[in-house]
Length: 110
Image (cartoon, rainbow, N blue to C red; front, side, top):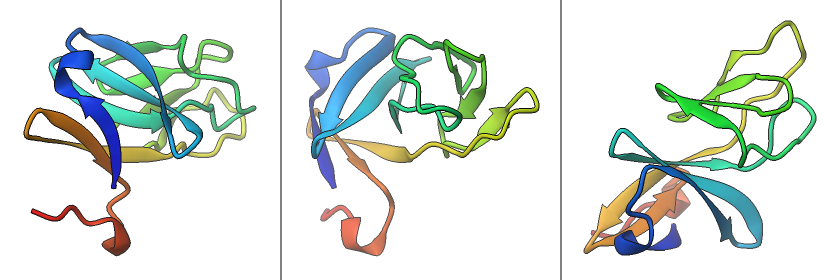
């Protein structure tokens, strides 16, 4: 379980760059829902922070490859080889945002 921070720090729709254990991730608020994905395209590793978000996808600003914000799977790869990206589940508890990879070792204590 990773702590992202207070809900009040991420009030607006958009892309927020966050560090989780020294790794670059994006906290995305879109249609009043939070998502967390790694800030690295699965194609050439380019940052996704300047990408566009539409529906539940983020589009790489370099090659327009898209990834599902829910699971990191490649949605549109334009015929290029591309790996999925890491997607974490965002949890809000007591007005604090956390994220989890869903593994048994990372279960949230309720």
